[in-house]
Structure formats: structure tokens, C-alpha cells
Image 1 (cartoon, one colour):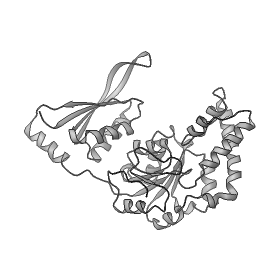
Image 2 (cartoon, rainbow, N blue to C red):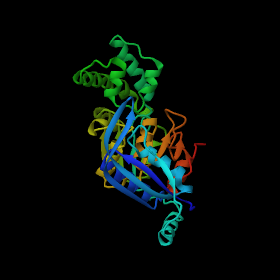
Image 3 (cartoon, one colour):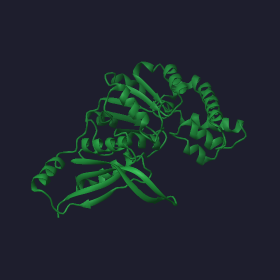
Image 4 (tube, rainbow, N blue to C red):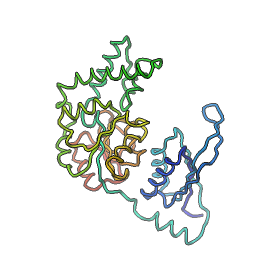
Length: 333
């Protein structure tokens, strides 16, 4: 029996399979990943028999890499319940096993940081309390009364989902769009007079210290909100790219918005650092194959984040960036 294992997983598309395979190899979590296309899978899911076309991943790794590999694979996967099965390698070609040893014995690689991707609400502006109050105000104007659970669930979500949660699943797409636009207009009316005092502490000095790093805003927020906030706070000059949730097919927790921002910047995902405050946003950053700094304006704990910081004045933030990050989770002092 060797210390090597084969990990099996399946993906629903060629793009997903290739993205995950490349990420696992780049991160030194696997020595090799084979992708077998267009297998046919039968399984029972939510009470019905599925007949699905899938792509099979055959991952060559070691037992001591498995926990980190499993966490990375599950975070990057688009399935609600991804397959992750580890099979022991009893024996093999001495030359091939030696190659696996050489690849897997190397130190886990931490890619150089080449770009910063920022969420908007809760990261650049500590606006979630105002969003919460505005959603409650708007819902009451339309005869509803949001519960605490509804208000908690809105963080990191795109407006089309929030509108239906608050005002009803019966709404047409046009009605959803109109309600979302009206609520955001009310929010901007409230934000305008207080935008500067709502900025997350230290964000402007941080942006000024890192003018050489390409930056993007990648947010589920409405486009009008992103543009309004950046202009009102005089922050447009810092960002080469802005991507909002309506510009991609799938909002956070899917990785689309971060992958699109990295593409527009021309930076590989592994070389990007995401700044996020929401659970969905952290999941999206990890799924994109990026490291995530969790800003704890909204949640005290953000599972999966490489660093937790209260704001941009946290001394641990610059220390972590200087060392280009690592595999340890740092907590704000």
C-alpha cells in the first residue's frame, strides 16, 4: 500500500472540469488530473432518476493533501452535492510513483498577487445596514413586512432573488426589475448625503498604497449603485474594471462575476485576491480559484477566507499581502 490516492469527482460541463483540474494542479493539491469527457451517469436525486452527461475527474494526489483538496474541490464546484471519493493506490510503476512523490513533496505554491477584486457593499462602503433599512422601508410601502430571516438572507444576493423573496414569487420579470430599480433609487437617495462617512475605514489609504495593483469592483449590486457610489466617493480613479451581477449569467455564490473581472483585467484567477464580506461572496471567490480576504463588517466568521480583517486598517492585512498569503487563516486582532 502506498500513500498515494486517486480522487474521483464529476462535473456537469467541460469548462467546469477544466477549471477545477487546472486549479488543483496549480495549487499543488494534485500532481495530475485526467478529464474523461461525456460519461453517462444514472442516479437518484430529489426523488427522481437522473440520466446526465458528465465529465469525470481522476485526480492523482496523496493522503496528506486530501483534506485541502476536498475543501478546494467542494468550494470550486457548481454542484450542490459534488462527488468526492478517495481510492487508495495499492501499487504502481516505480518511475510513475517517484514522479508523483517529486510533484507532491514540493511545497504548496502560493501564486503571486497581481490583482485585487473588491465587492462593493460591506467592503468599500459599509452600506448593508442602510440596504437593510431601505429594503424594510420599501417592502412596507408595498404592504409587506420583512422578517429578520428575510433581512439576513439578502446579504450578497442579487436583486432579482431579493425582490421575489420580499414581494412574492408571482411577480413577472418586468415587475421584478421595476421593483429592484425603485428600491435602489430610494437607497441612493439615502446614501448620497452620507457616502463619505459610510466608507469602510482605511479603504482610501489602502487603495492609494496599492496604486500599482490592477483593481476591479465585482459585485452583485445594481450597475447604477456601483457607478453612483464610486463617483460620489471619488473612487472611480482606482478601478480599471467594474462588473455587476447583471452582467453575468449566474450571480454569487457562483464564480462568474469574479472570473469575468479577472478576464477583463487580463490576470489569471489564481493571481487575484478577492475582498468580500458575505458568505455567498466568499464561496464565489473560492469557486473562482482565488484567495479571499474576509472583511467582517457583516459577518464575524467567513468560512474559507484566508484572512479575516475588521477593515482596511487591520495591520494583519498588509502583513498577509506582503507575504503573498499562505494556507493559514488569519484573524483580525
